[in-house]
Length: 268
Image 1 (cartoon, rainbow, N blue to C red):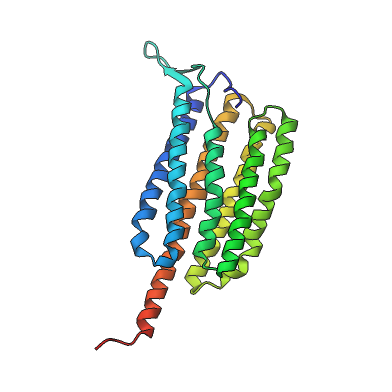
Image 2: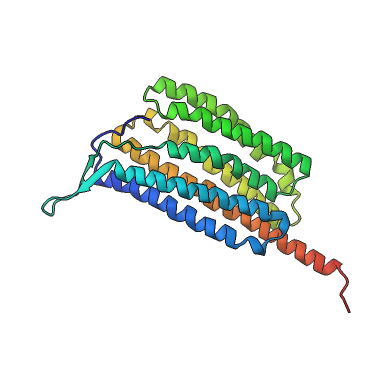
């Protein structure tokens, strides 16, 4: 991992600190919500909702580790009532936790979307493997460039990681369009499409944040923007996305209950 640059202002340090803290709060709250909602959906969708909770639980753990590593890397102090000053302690800031988190959670995010769409079993298994492996490969190819300061090396790994990235985005936007339109109700179809497009929108932020150090930003400002942007993108891609997994699961559960209640003869 690359060492942190010196010269952080208190505002820059505090922005990253608060961004990481927000990630912990959002992911932890989402985990509780998803698992408390399990009894409210039918068995067909409990696996998807369970995975949504696992994703945010893993993210909560890793955000706690990143937050602690960030706090340990700095000393913040104020002397004689003056402005706060930020100094490096010499302890490393381990941002690798973020990539470990992505390697574990990104394939699961796609699997939970596929499960909630209730595709035929063969198609579910095939898509889960293809998208899961492609997303894991995307993360694995991105990490070697993330820890490099050499811009040519960063661009090289960025280009490689964009190959599986484009495949996943194409599948979400085009390959699953027909399946999304065939949901049992118009509300469920709309929610499934929203989950697909939220995934694409949130994912599009990552390649741009990845290259933030290649567009004229450097030093503490680049690190601050990187940490805050990744934190916000993660909350969208995991916590908010999980809500859009829960919503169609609830809608289809209600639809299923209403259908069964209408079709089953009353017991006298």
